[in-house]
Length: 342
Image 1 (cartoon, rainbow, N blue to C red):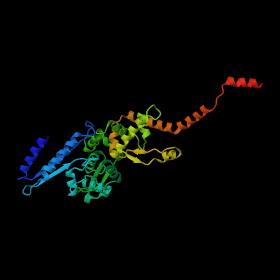
Image 2: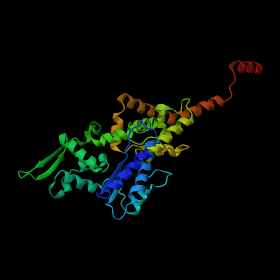
Image 3: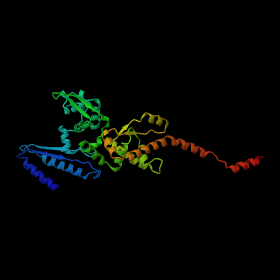
Image 4: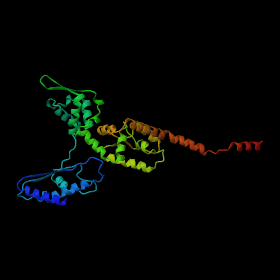
């Protein structure tokens, strides 16, 4: 590899004497076939560093322009120094972070432009349609275009005048849309790749979390794999909690406040439980489609049973313990004692 890079650098150096050179390097990954520590990623950044030091930085004044473009998900890993090419991009203000649109108003304006509304009037877009697209696409422009194209088949009607000018937009059954059926779109494909890139335990936790419409706790997930009332150890709970923390770091799960009924029960209890929720509609829809209906019912049933046991079983066990601690005198001893008294 080092010899091939050296030859490539020499060829590019000779070419840059007469022609401008644009060097584009891209690194992508998205399956669970590779280990968590990708060796290809280290090779990529070593190659980038070599090209940057031996080709970009050594550009003489008489040569044509030399430009390097890097496209990757993470430009810097944790606990590692920033690569020289990325540091140079930050210093020259040429590092671009491709995030979604900032506000819902920007999403509505982008939708109006894509629907060819007159003067980009976003007021013609119904509020339910605007909220649905903003929540599903996470303000990603590509996902917005794909969502509108899919909704125009059955759920969006654009009414035009005789002159071809759009007068209004109608939407119907927007709450019955199942985005997981759009498997041919990049939006669903990228989400599936992100889910498949998770470790088996993390993927299982994320899929189980899609079964709950509201907040859930660690005990709700553990009820299907390592119930607190079985012979499982606390180490099983630590593994599940570690998987949840990783999903929180990747923003696939969110830590939320406990619901009102749970706060009332926790105030009387000895400890408080942390609650989580899957708020990303795209991940929730795609992850839920990977589970059978029987599996969803099983997860919900085990969680309900665990909640009921956690609520009522400790008091019943306390009553049982009090009964067992009471002194018990066998009946024949009582009869002998009565005969002695008579």
